[in-house]
Image (cartoon, rainbow, N blue to C red; front, side):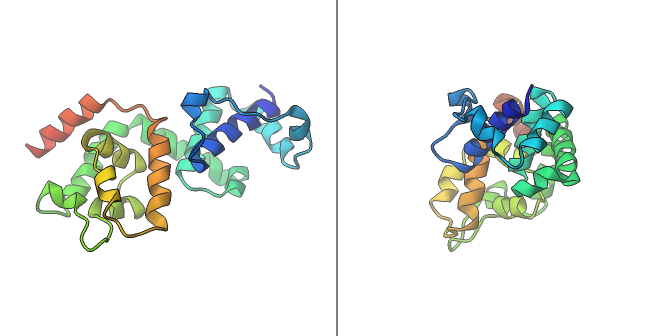
Length: 194
């Protein structure tokens, strides 16, 4: 893999996470960018280096972890990028365990499961606040939405037009890349609640 290839992969993920018009799976990761334009980039040496360090699969994980964590582009150049990537890989490897533990955290905060999703006076529900405060992972939030389809419902009621729309877009875009066995998590949720 070349630095140019690595940059095109990065660009596909960047468009996927920051644009409402580009969908990585639909476009099969294809982007238009010339090699001559890449050669003029001041950061081309960075992509040349990571193309030598990571294989294609790892590089995709690095970029996903970067955009899901809401890191700034410059963070990709730092050691924090590797830490973010390692943390993301751990979350993915233990997604079921994390889901069960984070579900317990959520359930400790409410008397009724439905209270997690209540939007009162336009304020964020408990499940969204837990996401903002990193009390639950973005993966757990996506799993809950995959099973319950609550985001569409709460979206109509939340008054926040700054933070929530960015998180909603990030979760929506990430959900199309995250492999979630809905039946498995539906059964885990039923088992925990009943």
